[in-house]
Image (tube, rainbow, N blue to C red):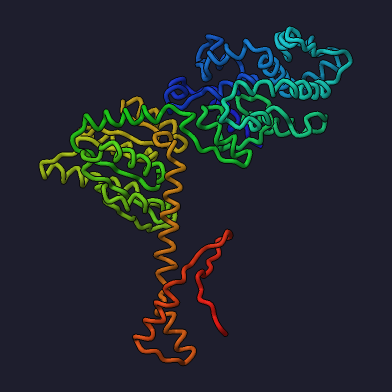
Length: 485
């Protein structure tokens, strides 16, 4: 269970982020999360239906208006709102039902009458006499069964609808015991549920607000269903815009220094950025790319180092203490050395790109006013404070999560192939020499062959053999010569 301080912190994070963060950081779409938020009953104020103080629309009002015109969507929304109210106020409602002999339509402070009225207008007279609250909750499940499938039309075809459909149906939701178990999970983690809406979900404290935007929601949703969501290009507009921003930065620069913090950047995403820069002929203004690595980081950085077209300087730091990295210090020192050397040679560095989500590099930016900076971040690794600091000081930045998102799978495949080939060629195959094997076999059998006989034997028999791999990855020898004995 979460303590009260964590509950308050998480609720503030998920419900009261500034509008600037929601709308501009990063350039992710919010179409799918807006539709899900409508269906699960998120309060209308988050769609901009109210003009209350400090309430900023976090979902698209146009989506709300569109779906609110559809009877099926309205029914699902009202049922979800009603279930959330009943679960959230369960004890208080039970007291009024048992002590004051009230039905749910007679307690407007706990069950908003407009929800019941909307259901009745759409053909669902929900309130019945002598009904227990537990039975009403089961009724919600049963009413949702025929109406949720009719809302699939609001989701794009490339989204796996069963994963979204599952949000509405608890395990054994047609039984009182099944709903009790779901309610227990909800009570213990209520502030981890999106906008405290009661849905079929196993929350993770590290997920934060899962309905922040489509780029966050779909990967988490798929992961909860033991699947992977790859095509990030469908949920973000950031790629082209980020490229345009970078192109503009490069156009206004003469000599650019790129500093990459291998400990605080995803190698696959960075490689994607560099490939895009290379494809767009934007490398000529780069004076140097400093790549500072640590022994505990990913070996994927080898793929970037193999690109001979990049003016790259690679440096591996050593750790004096296992728990303390020296990457940020080493990168800062190397950065200033390049600045000083550029001035001395009459080729000053006028612009720099910092590839890191680490806010420890802010002093470097602040104390080098003569250099224009562009910062490349990763959304989930960038703190809110660092985002605000960059924004308040007009330091341009973007999120590499989305810069090359559509190519991530291709890059991962390429990096994996390169590493597998390297492992085979430099690791296993480098240890195999057929002439050495022949010599060991001759010695073992106590046989002698002159050079001509050995060469003939190799060409006739051994050179024709090759290694193949079975489906389970086992190596086997193929084209073996037939033996007579």
